[in-house]
Length: 408
Image (cartoon, rainbow, N blue to C red; front, top):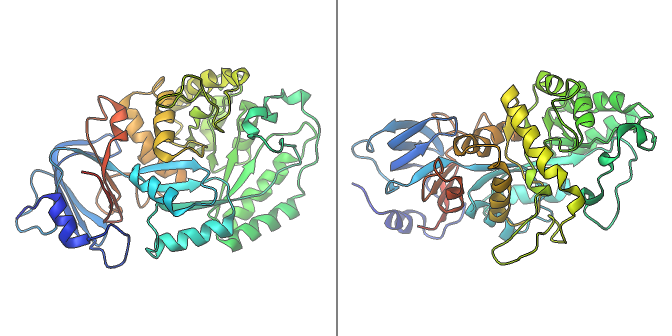
């Protein structure tokens, strides 16, 4: 027998909290399913047992199904993934805001590792509601100075042409390896490198030492590269993930595309950083730090999207990431504005789900709606394949089979 969703929630889940007592078996039916990999079922059913997807099929729920959620014809997609975010102190309200916006996994690209590990434990224990967290610890490559007190993107030293950059010493490889080990011991999943290469040399040797040590400890090396010249070095160093689409220079010059493709590493978008942010009421564009937009960086708002499309066309996996601290729903709307200039809605669904899962290194468990994956599901009103901004109208969020947000 089918029941309205509100009745199911009231009977089965009560207050929407992620506790072990929450049922993890449910059937979502009468749903338009977008599987994240380009597949679509006009009217289908998803069967979840123990938090895992056991069946995805066209048509109605199996006879005798219990805990049935009637989607009412709404679209159901994989949980969204932000594969480059800065969550800072990770307050409970922010963690819940990620869930409410549809994000079931978030990769934090640089925060206090022990503090964020403690937050992750609370989420996993059901003490607070939040997304699956992947955590990154910093290992400094060299002593390139970033300005204090302001958003470093405002005065990115990577904007200086390579042959005009000040020569600085690289971190000795042995010291870099020790820092990798420390981050691993603290519970990090990734090692974050900020790569602004120095003409003095030595950076590549240190990068390779970091990559080697990270892999020995079961971590990935994720590399901040905003200039094309630095992205090429990251590719040579066997980075596991490009933390940005390079937006300083053009990737179709001097063989850069071929080198990035050959690395096999996925890349996140972060295009909105250099697009002026306009909220619902303000008239003047803002930078990502909520200050006045820095118009002399605007060329990055053109180079970034073009480079993203060229790399996509060449076969690079491009996944969603914001590199912001805006509220999650605002970040999503802002990043989609930039992405929509070069990608269509069907591509954007994949970027936000399957490809972002590859970037966050969770693609074996989530990112698509298919048998054996975790039941990370988002129900939205509207049709994202006609209007991608329909993903902003989130009505239901399921993480690991648990309903964590219901706004029907």
